[in-house]
Image (cartoon, rainbow over all chains, first blue to last red; front, side, top):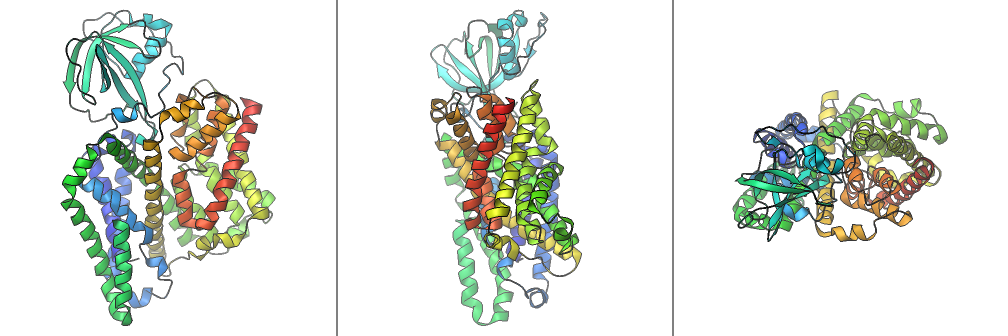
Length: 230
Length: 341
């Protein structure tokens, strides 16, 4: 294998390690995969270094070239430079509103979970959009018990009197992302812009059919969270 | 861009080829220079890249593209490690000796053996390629290639989690996948031509110490499989970005057409087999049979896998193998769904 192959391999490992060190990887894959990305990154860097040293060592060419040259060519491996260059310079963003209408929507009724009633407390209860949706379909949301809840997601559509809040669920990587969407109502003024991340506090409002409704009492615009998927 | 750069190197090498020794001394440096050039060019073009990512469709494409590539890396590394270990530690002639001669026996054994590899499809392609180059019967290696990503314990547990309270879905997935892999193996044993596998057979191991065989094989497989993975990831990202959801909704429902539609979707989406059950669970507008077809076809045929198979076994092979596998997977899913679901 040529020195170029070794260099590309080292770059692959460097990109993998950089993604895990900067925590950017959670934009693309489940957080649990992080440790495996680190292990793969180290493995690949060691492999690339071994190749590079072997290729540059004097006297190596005469001994090692007694077989097929094709086998040594980087060939299609050059294509790996495309994602490497892209990821070293610009990290693509987390999935946003563009994909909400394209992906298969999550069916929040699947599983048919049954929930205990929420306690009435002063502090709003933080929950995922998925749990909110599942609670909404369990006995028409009576388990909310009028308690205040807090949801974090991004704006996936805006309407005159509210907006849709969405968040993706991923099982492995962003290619299998499926969005959960809820309707935020009772807002005043202009809704936040598309793809803006917000934390919404409010109470469940019955009557949403396919898309459950949340009557907002406060909306805070936030930066995209470190782990953007549920 | 990277592709064009690769050609430049090849041409450069040929130009310098008059003096063989000189060219060899020259080539590695040229390769590194091209790598550096690509990175520098990308750095110079960075503002243009940032502008491009401001477009939602481009950003969506880029995120899915790098996601597939990144998520595949740990599995690919596992696959190439096992493949390299086979090259370094399994002596030639050993596999043909221990495997049953009769395909009718070897193929089902290979199908069940797939349960022992807890990975997804990206890792099993280099392993199957290595098994073929080490002289394992092609039918058995190909059966293993199909069954490993579909029936390993991680995938079955994920399926059980995605379909809570429905163990029949897990059983149906296991049976339909085993059946599909076995049928393909037996058909290949009867009608397949080994000449189609020349590319994998030719791929010999590096000489030298065990360690250098290990590193050389792993390095070669990583770049080979990785490059084709990039082609597959780009294809899947493109299809996910341009094919609108309404196409899917228009064929929703039950019946054989819906089953065929989800089988086709599995080919286009190229989701990792450890995650596809969750997507299948969410496709509630489709019948359970159609969603079973999605989970049986996905780990065996998809755009990313076809690309990897072209790289490992050659285009003429993939041209025959992918349709055969698709038909077998759809048929098995329909049959098992009719029986169990």
